[in-house]
Length: 93
Image (cartoon, rainbow, N blue to C red; front, side, top):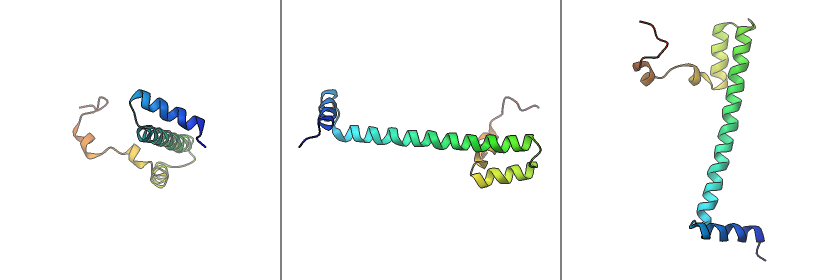
């Protein structure tokens, strides 16, 4: 027996000029984007937690950097080589 919801989705896809594979791929990409958003929020929370600990004197700067490395968030802190070539607006001469 044909699932009515699936049939409507496929019919809708055909009417829009997209195939069922395109619809499935779109759903997959949207799911991956949602997962990436959750991971980004987790990283942001971890960075915030480390910053609060540093600000409150619970950890020293070296430990905060080590915690960032352990959490996999050190790349958000350190600039890469390409960015080093570009002047920053807050750099003072």
